[in-house]
Image 1 (cartoon, protein in one colour):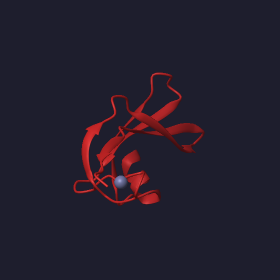
Image 2 (cartoon, helix red, strand yellow):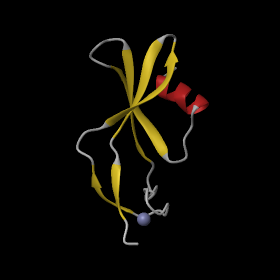
Image 3 (tube, helix red, strand yellow):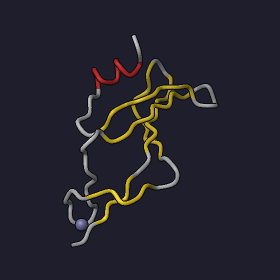
Image 4 (cartoon, helix red, strand yellow):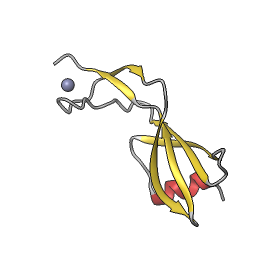
Length: 86
Ligand SMILES: [Zn+2]
């Protein structure tokens, strides 16, 4: 059974998909790459409305998840920037 399959059982997301799980260079952390689901639009942090993506941040960010069998798990995600006109 694959890690992604397990993840989708415990933490299925409507907005994001998990793509790839691998060990980080330190050998003690599992990195799970994630990206927005097709058709999912970013939400403006100012007004809360969904808009269009106009850019991505250069460096992916890591979001800590619950550890698995005492191994740290992080989601690796490249933040989108939303072009809001309001
Ligand atoms: Zn806005």
